[in-house]
Image 1 (spheres, rainbow, N blue to C red):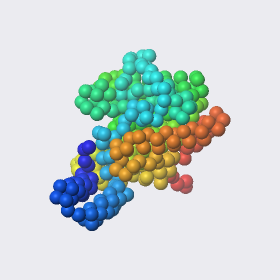
Image 2 (cartoon, rainbow, N blue to C red; image 1 turned 90 degrees about the horizontal axis):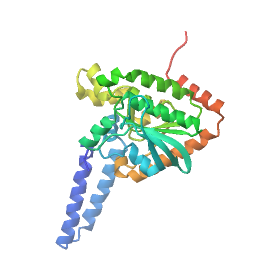
Image 3 (cartoon, rainbow, N blue to C red; image 1 turned 45 degrees about the horizontal axis):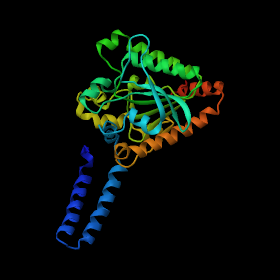
Image 4 (tube, helix red, strand yellow; image 1 turned 60 degrees about the vertical axis):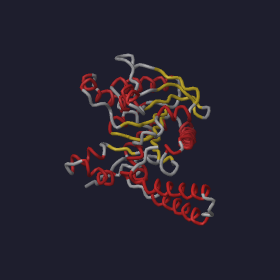
Length: 317
C-alpha cells in the first residue's frame, strides 16, 4: 500500500519488528523482550501520529488512491443497487453514477461522485469531476425520489466540477445552481456524506441536505489548499499552511457547526479497513434517516432552510 510521508516512521518500525521476528525464528534466539519493546514503541508511534493529524495530512489521506470510492461504499453499505443512466438532454456522465438501492431495508436513491484507480478508469470517470449532464442526471434522480417518496443519499468525493470548455458550453454553472435551488425544495429527506474530497461547487451541487456528514479524514472546501496557496502566497508549496488556515478538515467543520456529524475511520484512514468504514457509514446514515423520517414535510423543509440560513457570522449595527 502506498505510504504517505508522515507514515514512514511507522513503516520503519514495522520493518524493524519483522526483522527481529525473523531473526528470532531463523537463529533460534529468544528476542521476546526486544520484540515486546518494539511492539510497544510501534503502538505508541501510531497513536501519536494518527491522533494528531494536521489538516494537510488529512487532505493527503482523503486523496489516497486506495481509499474507498463511492461505488465501493454502495457495494458494501447498500443493497440491491440498480443504476440509472442519462440526463435526458445530453447523455450519461460516468463520473456521477446513481440509482435505486436500499440501506438497512430502507429504499432510497443513492448518487455521488466516482473516481478511478488507474488511468483508464479515471478517463472514464473524468477523475471524479462531473460535467453538467452529471448534475442534471442527479437532479432527475432526486426528482424521481420525491415522486416515489424515497429519501436521498448523496456521496460526495470530487476535487471540483469539470472546468473544461465543453462543460462551460453546456452551462456547468447553471446546472449546479439549479441543483442548489431544487434540492432546497425537495420534500424528502436528504443526507449528504463527504467521503474524501469535497471540492467547491462540484461538491455543493449535490450537497444541499438535511444532514451533511463527513468521513473523519475527508475535507470540504471552497478551493483546494494548493489553489488557495497559489493565490495568497503565490506558490503551491504553502498548501499545508493554507489547509490549516481554511479549517477544511472534518473536526474543524464540526466545531464551526457547518456539518452535522463526523463518521469515524480506523487509524490511518478508511483504506486500512474499507469494511469498517462502510459499516460506520451505514450505521450513521440509517440513524439519521430514522430521525428525518419522523418529521413532517413542512418541518423538514423549514429545518433545512434554517440550517443553511444560520451559516456564517455577522454583526448588526
